[in-house]
Length: 190
Image (cartoon, rainbow, N blue to C red; front, side, top):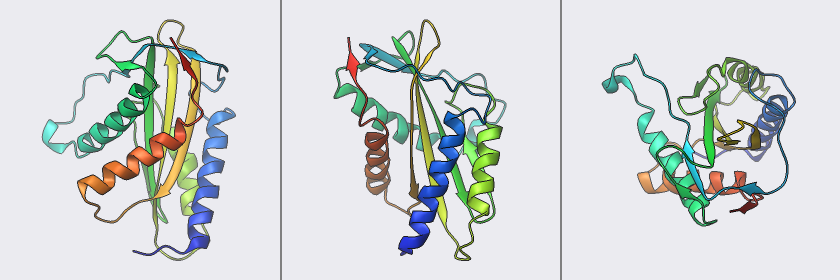
């Protein structure tokens, strides 16, 4: 599927507005970000609570593996090792997917419990687009939180048009590109 360059620009502007809202307090998630180097040699992902949805109904699990692998590769290249729990920092992420009519979030590993305000804001932006052509876009938000103090050390995001029926390799490459963009300015020291 070919995308109109104006549509892509509009979607990225919309995503920027969404994240600006997230960073400036339009949600109940933490918004004050500490600055400077992140002192960490290890990390773990947010540990999701028990789920009531049967495992066969969870279609999001494959995307979690792709996102977590991409984040793990990026942080490993900086000398930060993944642990199952007890890392120096905790990584949370939120995926918001939208089109002209609907928006949903995949927040199993976000960790703040309620991402409905971010999802509602994204819906407002995605569905408020004046372009009548159908589109699908995704925004990935990554938080790095100090595991001892629970201070938000870094929040980053990136948005892209969604690929239509990508191969597993193409999807993994796209997610890695997005994660690398989000974490490009991350400064880590042990």
